[in-house]
Image 1 (tube, rainbow, N blue to C red):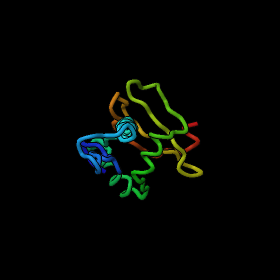
Image 2 (image 1 turned 135 degrees about the vertical axis):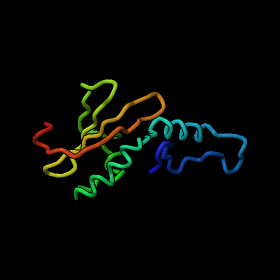
Image 3 (image 1 turned 120 degrees about the vertical axis):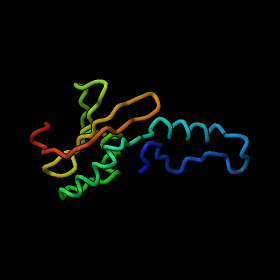
Image 4 (image 1 turned 60 degrees about the vertical axis):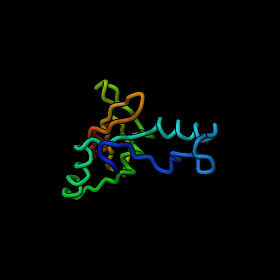
Length: 118
């Protein structure tokens, strides 16, 4: 996880065979990665530690899954969005984020009881 910068996995920054040129396939791959970039605010980064102290560990992959493939998106707090994903029988993970043209900025996230957020 990187605070204040993008977490880009396996993104070829240069074409290894010919560093001066990108193929169409390279460009499409970069475009796809750029469209799905996620930035964690300092608060969101610290939230992992806070929840762990409260014996409710959430992994970065769970937050990313909630944002990239939510069960529900709540639009009632625009421009902020709240993505919700079921994490077990009794709990959901709610992720508050802001969508821009370039990225998704994770503001905060929190677990909640499923019955409270139907």
